[in-house]
Length: 352
Length: 273
Image 1 (cartoon, rainbow over the protein chains, first blue to last red):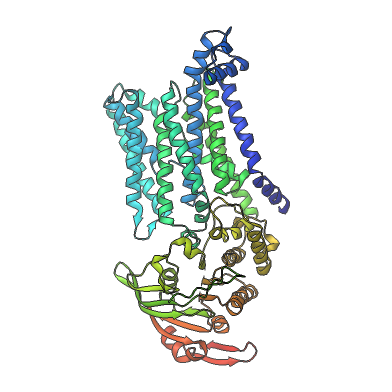
Image 2: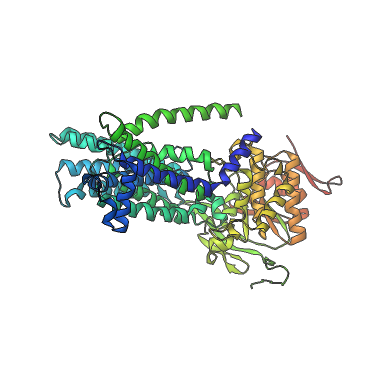
């Protein structure tokens, strides 16, 4: 055991190398998956197409099939990048939720964020709201998620600040009410019921560059905020009292991190629908490699969450004979895998 | 009344002037947990806070460490109102060893102790050789260096308590607040940790304010004792003067005999069953 922990520590210290590997892997996966699909495109052609878009030199893509640039740039890349951003965003906010709620089993949806988003989206679909064209559903999802968060924080705040137990409880209560609301909307909805169900299952189909822009703004800003406060988040795992004695303004940091993480999660949900287990599983797995230090965990979770969800999306898009909703796939793979990790942990804990 | 010495050799030589509590009161909703608490803590002393369960001991420590703010009255630290200090400033002045405590994430022992150095390090800075030296030195002193690479989640309650204690020592502050910090420990570790705290008091002029359950242990280490009963000070003063059967009877409602024990050169209390 002594030895295994020494190895684990050596792993933890190789952060720069890990991050570099993950960046290379992410770029690799993006390029490879851009070539996969109904129309197979060779890797060299993809590299050329991307280089052309960046440099503006049209001479590079001379001689290529004319449909390739359109497929890669207008169809596949927006979808691929959205999937990577959403995966990274969910994983990263999972890290923060687990850190603040002092619970390694919390995830971006623990506080009812997803239920709020789902309710908002269902409402928009049911009422056939097209105020903002394609943005109507994401906007409603976002409003639903944000107002759920405000309600949950309001419910759980007391004179002593936000306690993690109160937050989790209020999250569960509000989510339960909203789920009933969603069921009601589905019941009332006639023809739109299939649209609601499909949206709830999550999908990256027909994503545009506008989705990429929206997700990347929130994920990048969120990343910067998380990294800035990551050391405080470490201290908060010692408990609020100790963290305060080590110079952390726990109330302020909790509020900032909680709202940022929820907003990132809300944007991810509003762009893609509900995709479970990424925010729960990725931080959990990455902690085995990087250790619980959030200064390392946040960037590693961002990158690996992106890689993971992109791979999953590519599998449903290009490998499986029919495209199944990504949310279903992540739950089908992630759920049992999580059971396994959980079971194994219980076993080892008893042995110690 | 700010006593602040800055010498050439050691930039961090503070002469901690008393924590002065002026008539502070604090309560949760209706009930007052602490009432009319007035006392001064002078540097270079070991203070013990003693009282039955629910007498407001932890609340006093929370008020002193600014985790809670008094509703009435004020607390001064170094002559300046405590509320005027930022958390960051205070973290270089006051270290806390909390009462009970568990950590859900598998940090290593060394990582936890290093967290005691965070207040002295800028946000994105790596630990300096000096920080690493202090951490190693403290771990050796408290004897946790033997398991410095193990995960905190794998340790027993007592081992964890020693790690947390070491973390507070590594914070290297003029004031150390102990909230039943030795309650989970075997007697040998209790003594060794309290010895280390006492050394800081005697040699470096630090102040220790400790809530303690074990009256005999408190009698052995504390220069001053503060007896709390229902949020009020029942008695306080130099240990030899204040620790007597009358005080114990009035605070704990237990009959006791107090005598000087030459073996430990301290007062001893024995209780009647």
